[in-house]
Length: 360
Image 1 (cartoon, rainbow, N blue to C red):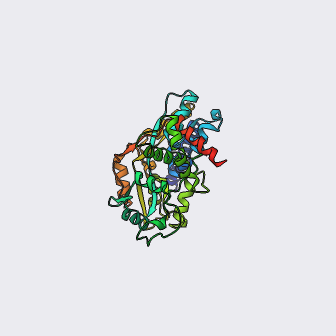
Image 2: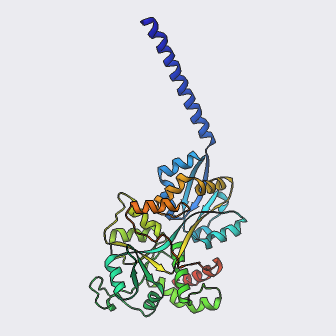
Image 3: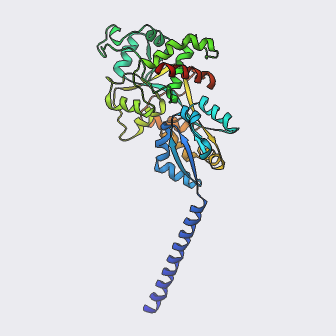
């Protein structure tokens, strides 16, 4: 028996060592195939790139991705981009400026998210009673023209009749980020200016000058505002209705909160879509071969597409988006019809610079 067991154990040992050597060699080979790429991204995508499953899927595709966050306008105006392999801002205007100035013909339309307003059921019901909001069965829509009229008339919450929900002496306004740095605020400006400009995209200096006092007040009346879209949404989650009755956000932020086990979703939290609204496209602009590889991977890899949806973003996998949001008991519009485009980068930048001077 010992004569038989000895050789068998030796064979098992040799095979085991061989397998270990094979796996080690393969791991080292895989490691050599992985390249590191560096990029600048909007803050709303930080958690996606830090997710272990995303890191694993990117590594499987041959990439180690290092990211720094910055406001989309800052990415377009304030960084030396030669040290990066890609940039990944939010919004078409900033992306188009970067692409033109860097001489890049290619970009990757990775995912998008509609602009929306995080609010509370008592607030939505109060606004519905006053003709500003409609209940669409699970979500609401805000008549932006009526809202702009209400804001221009300097109405306060206490001016609304039959107001038992939020009887405070504060201006009726939508909280946003800092329009000088953040894309979500720039998209709010794009939307408000369209509505105030007789439902037309702002194109000329004359239109800008006519709209400027109202557009400036939309932001100055808010008082101190944050640079990152994450901060006002955190205030909404933690501080509640008193601090944040209406907050301009990306739809993706609300979905990600509802999907997270510890996301802080509360029964009275609701989503209101401005009508009209606009989409924020997240365009990855490659500045080198590594950026090209990342753009292709994010756009084409089905695992990464599904992971993006689990962070609230919409993309070409419509079926999984609907399945995922239904599973999280979210009632969302499958298709938004009344969608506008933002102004050109030059016009939008001109408005932002004018508002910036008002802060000084």
